[in-house]
Amino acid sequence: MCINHTNRRDFFKTAAVAGIAVAGVQALAGPTVAHAQEQTGSLAEKVALTNVRVFDGSEVTAPRTVVIENGRIGVTALGARRIDCAGAVLLPGLTDAHLHLQDVNTLRQLAGSGVTTGLDMACFPPSAVDSLRGLPGLTDIRSAGTPAVAPGSAQSQLPTFPPDAVLTGPDQAPRFVRTRIAEGSDYIKIIVDEPGLAPETIRAVTTSAHSFGRLVMAHATTTATVERALDADVDMIHHVPLDSALSAATAARYTATNTVAVPTLTMMEGFAGLGIPGMDYAAAEGSVAALRRAGARILAGTDANRTPGIPVQPPFGTSLHHELELLVRAGLTTREALRATTNLPAESFGLRDRGVIRPGCRADLLLIDGDPLADITATRAIRGVWVGGVEYSTAG
Image (cartoon, rainbow, N blue to C red; front, side, top):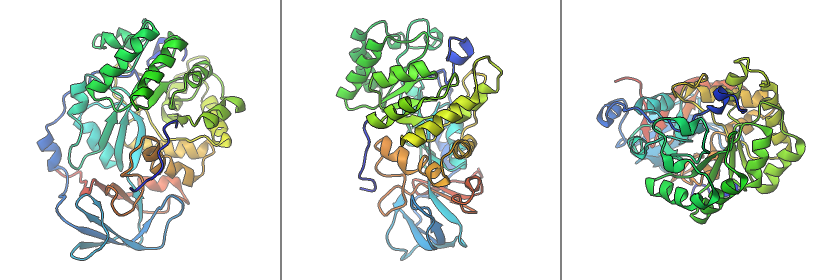
């Protein structure tokens, strides 16, 4: 195995804010798979990237050779076509730990920016998600499918929202979870917002999901709903508050319970910029600083979306580079920010075949100019991207 550790435990009533990442607008039909493949390279060719410096999760190494063979990181360069990288830096392919899938073009935009794994936090119907799985040479995805929401919530009022995901009590939780798993959801998502699910219902969904071995994602955008999510024993909390920064005590609860944080600072920055009273980006930034001081695990996620009616729509792919920059401004070191988009999401979501550059792992790779440990903006200087061993090209 490439990664041996898996961490299992790992806004307000304003309508515009209640719609942050309106979790799950029906995905639109995109270009065909055949057309998608026309824009990617070949898996058959064995390639050796020579004279390349590697980010190993701790430091950027001295120049070495990395082999790509049959979609994986290989061992020997014998018989490989050699590419002299002239000292460029090779990163594991990046992971966006919070986005909302749309169509095949979404995957192209992600791959073109070096985002080789996309973790969708709500998309329906299931056929829309399935149509985006396993496309050769394009970003690999996982999805929460349809989230659990409360009656009267912004999500429940969408014309296409599945009625069986609108929960009125804890007794509906087991059926909700079973249905999502049958539809192919890789993890379970709960909207913990106002109007929100009752604490006992949130706990019931979490307990049921855990009984099936599924991680639970909680959407929480205020200090009060963060506390509610922590009380329910969820595995990850997405977003951070804009009403006030998390206290040291609350941040410590993340660490004590191994709850993972996905702050989505890009989205919080966007909403704070709308001028809605009570929303302060400094609160979001302060929450990240508090979480870091407490030793909580922090992942990079953007909430990239093209959801109609949402006033903030971070672009797919490029916004992840901005998210890394925001995390550094909030207090993370450049090393911590890189880990937040490489090995840590792989570990947290149990994706044991990626996040690091080691023999046997998926050849998800991002080649850049410059040293991102010295300057996090270097991740934008992209020279090459490989997704599952296939070199991505914008030509087509």
